[in-house]
Length: 206
Image 1 (tube, rainbow, N blue to C red):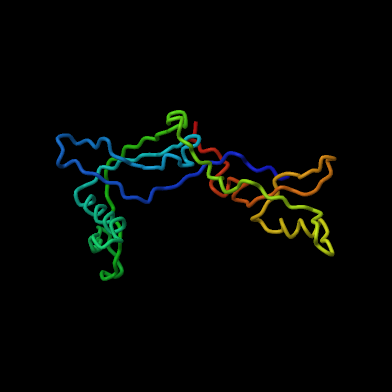
Image 2: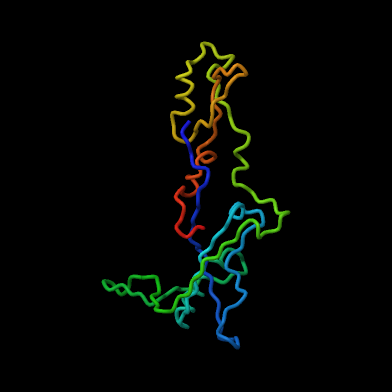
């Protein structure tokens, strides 16, 4: 059988607009701000989870731009949400003044920190998912199926089962006499973790 990696790493950029302001506070410090929320049984928490937190200091104009963008993208969908507003930044189209250009260019300070959360730091009674619950039990592709006349050849069976790229063999299925009867199999998403990430360990991973 073709060896597949058993450990992969996933990576995803956040699409949420996370902003806060300190103008009404005594100190120019953002504290106890929720940056991510995961279900208690999330598969991301099964071994170790990492998040790179970046904090940008925004000007008042840039803050207003991102606040309006957040409202336009996250607070629309119910009868009580505000109507979307015109979003304008400080980018202009040089060729056509009437052409709408979206975006905001700002110069500001940046602080960042990478945070790791291991499974051992979480309560032991949390039943964390693996993400592969639907992959059990595995299938079996028999080389000598019964009840089919005329029976297809083993080569035809293997070609029909594994001729594509989305269904893969796992291991040999043997009789008590060690005769090859077929192969256990499942979809690629259940066997090859590279469909969900990469087998190359990130440089920041311990």
